[in-house]
Image 1 (cartoon, rainbow, N blue to C red):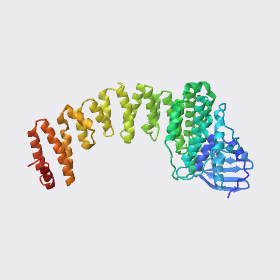
Image 2: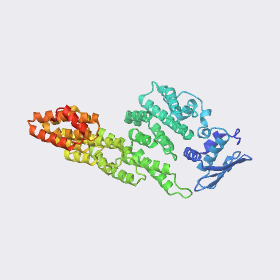
Image 3: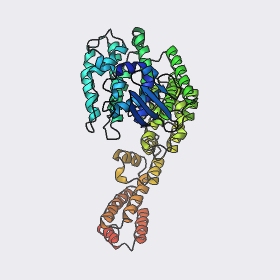
Image 4: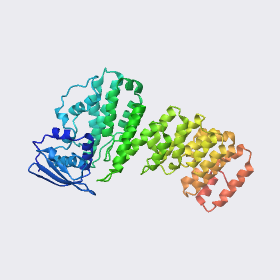
Length: 504
């Protein structure tokens, strides 16, 4: 076993930029460290799969450590080797990620603290649990909330909101670390955590926070740049958090421009690699960040071109938070433009996403921003998933024959219809519903069993009553005679017709 008992990881940690440590952590999780040896206080290993680099780490003279990647003095490959060495030495690899937690004095956070003061305190009081069953994450998050959130009681509301946001950001980082260390074992993830973060951001007083706490917001930008771009798959949707924080808290033109420039530069660096191919998850994170910024800055045309270029394509639901904000702010032209851009992509999507998509079009229609004919065409294009909405629209427009035809085409059972809808159609014209009764009666006949024949006869009796109301007995007689002859070989059905006194 590798013995690292006397190694000062606080000193080593200080040699690495946080971003490099995070990338090294992802390499460690991907299990790309091999041939690890430890001799005379020197760690040696190979890192990588496609591109392989030799790493030597001098634990007694750390500045003399080397890696053949030429990425700089202290690279992600060195960090990965240190994480692996901690693991094989029986110690927690997170000691290198957060060594300052044990050294940090556990003082309660104060309103006068800067944002940068909080994470070390969080780490000093919220311990990272080992996997302890499916609800390990719930226990961790609930304990973190109960311990940390009350500490801002009595603060200025704006600073309190910032503190609560950073508590959540810290906890979601911890969630990811626990999930990664679970190594495939099941963990329950509560989607309400993301909803709580979203609600917190939507209720922020952005102008007041930007006016009063600009340094803290700049620190928040730095925090996101370090933690919202994982190179490894995470259980937390950091893209959604990044976009929401920028939209609701950091949307200040100079900051947006600077962040766009930073993300573009980092993306170009990733794509213009010289020693190793780009990490696909990180590249995706950077593309999505750039897309968030373009939308927040209102450059929709450029954002759509960027979205079209991203592979694999983003699901339309990725854009729904922005569509909701356009509707809430009554930016109807932007909402219309995005919905039109998304329409060709909708047919192949799950029904639930199509229903959400239709709700945005209905909002435009109800606000008078969309003509009735255009609304109906959208509904037709998205059938069958738009069935409920289309049926509702046909009733609203008093297109009763179209409503019946729609239900006939999709063979909707009469019992599935709302009684108030049926009454509305029959009030317009009792005969409109006849084809649905005909269809239902024959459907049950074709099931060829006695209970179904009885159900068919019940519908036929209702149909007879309606023909009688219209004083069209002759038409009824012809119909029941034709139906009886068509199924004359079905003796049990013929018996039920006689019992119901529908034929002699």
